Figure (cartoon, rainbow, N blue to C red):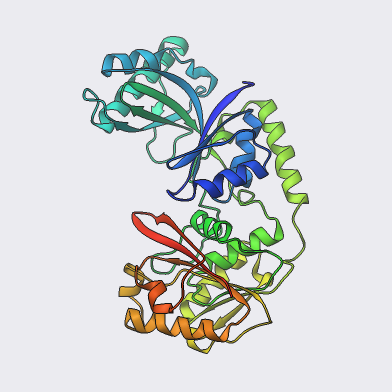
Length: 378
């Protein structure tokens, strides 16, 4: 499999950050689209993205592209694919689907069922055995994207979504996904060679993601991927080489201080546990404290936070009114002269309450919630 087409998914609004990541990985010609980035490359390129991409959610390898105006066409096109390249004897499969603008295939569950039937029938004809279906933990995950009559079939190299780095062992209310935290750091231009403070750290995701980036730790080093279940011997050898190189590239410590602070001592306890699981506990200082009492830790650096909104704000233990909370953040910024501030804000009154105009205001989505990445220069 020399030349491959890939589609790498990400949260809406983070496509630019993902594209820059792929360019940095020497992926040639990545093209942005809504909800992801596509590129043509080798299978090794796909494995590199799984290992190194911080913003990505899934890495999908395209295996077929055909016209399917109805169920019969979808079944026939799927059955033409040689699925023995991916599904070995005794392996399990699962199929998921998204459909759009096809009047004969409106229901994604039905479309997924037709794809599953075609794969099972093809493999039974070829091998004399049909694979079992495992919807929760398959060896091979197949994805159908159907738009109009254009059907595209993918194999998911990722397995579990890439935001599951493997270090989140302790949770707080409405935690920020690791991949979105990485996108906030990237889109906000957070430098790894300056002090970093998250004054509303929660379970520590922003500080941990910053520490991992500062140390040069590939986000996929501490987890396994779907492709490892069906990769060829040669692909596994290449993967071992990539992992070894990534391991050797880790810096012994973060170059600048990192502080994770929160008013909730249970949140800080969770952040400590997560940092320990991520092997960056020694790179982060943890404090329990109100944002109103934060003082500068040096002449310059970056403040980066995900202030509470929606579910997090409603359940906040302080019960503070949103405008009072945001106003106290504005007063804190007055004290932090010389520091840049990067916020993921889900409330439209946020910038007004801070009495500042952001130099960058970028729209993105935290799950179903529309939010704004805001950058305030000192």
